[in-house]
Structures are given as C-alpha cells and as structure tokens.
Length: 223
Image (tube, rainbow, N blue to C red):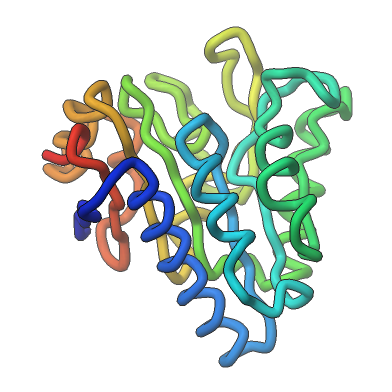
C-alpha cells in the first residue's frame, strides 16, 4: 500500500487522482479494448469525478460501476447516484451499471448486479475507487457488519447503517480488482487512515488487500 499526498491546493488531490484513474483506464482499453471502473459515494470524490470527466478518454469503451449504494428512492438526497450522475455520468458516454436499490427484494438485486459484473468483465474490475469513513469503514462495510465475511457472492446487502440499508460489493469482489485506490481528505480521516496504513484489523477497511493499492490523501489526512 502506497500513500501519495499531491502538493498544491484543494483541487490538486482531485486532479491527481483523476489522472491516475485515467491512466489505468487507458491501460485496460489498450489491453482488453474496454475498461471497468467502480466508484464509491460520499462528498470527497465529487471533484475527482468532475476532473475525470474532463479528461480525454474513449469514454464509449468505459463501464462505470457502483461500489455501493444506499437503499432509498430514486432522486433521494441520500443516494450516491446523484453526485455521480451530475459530475460524471451526464458528462461522458459511459455504460453505467447501477445497483437496483428500489427493488424490494434486495438479495435478488445484489445477485443480479453480481451476475452483470461477471457477464461484463468476468467479475474482474480494472479499478476500484474507495473512500474511508471516520469509523474506518469503506464501501458499505459498517463496523461489526457480517457483510465483510461474505465470501461466496460479489454483491450483498449491508446495514442498516446511518439510517439506511445498503447494497455493496463484497470483499472478494473488491480485492479481485486489478488496481485499488483510496481517496481520503480531511483531518477527521487522519486516525482511520493511520490504522489503514498500519493494517489495523479493528477497522473494516483492513479487509482490503495491501498489494496494488494506492492512497491519495490531502495533507490533513495523511499519516
């Protein structure tokens, strides 16, 4: 696991992470004629999505997947999809794969998402973008939730956590990716990031593998 702290102002973190993702997508397209990127929600990646959308890529050969999503109606402010759609999906002609969180049968929705993943890329994502919560969670793997122990499925239901059930990629699906990156910003993330880098097993994010993982952090969060 490598930590990179881009120099510069607040926009530098988003720009550097976006350029790194674009480089991985270009490699995937050159090698396999298509690229598969899974992205997380939260407020931190909004600027990164916008920066990524501005970069020149053969976007019609890029597939964008959700790492996780809150179970809420379409358009609900809690949905990760809102920011993703505004900053990226509405700007470039990617193929989007979204969790069907309005399906009343969440287990069936998770199974359908996993089936789509295997049909599209044999279950191997090129890049997975993760965030890091103040409590050390990543994806929708809440502290103490049994979702981190799911080993026989690539997507599953999690929660309730922070007032919502979730659908999320599982630990095996994330760790199978060719490249994994974290985007971490703010002083509140300094303690969990230090635990992540140290491999502290007390936080859910410790279930992410340590090889081929880069953490882009700002100075306030950097250990």
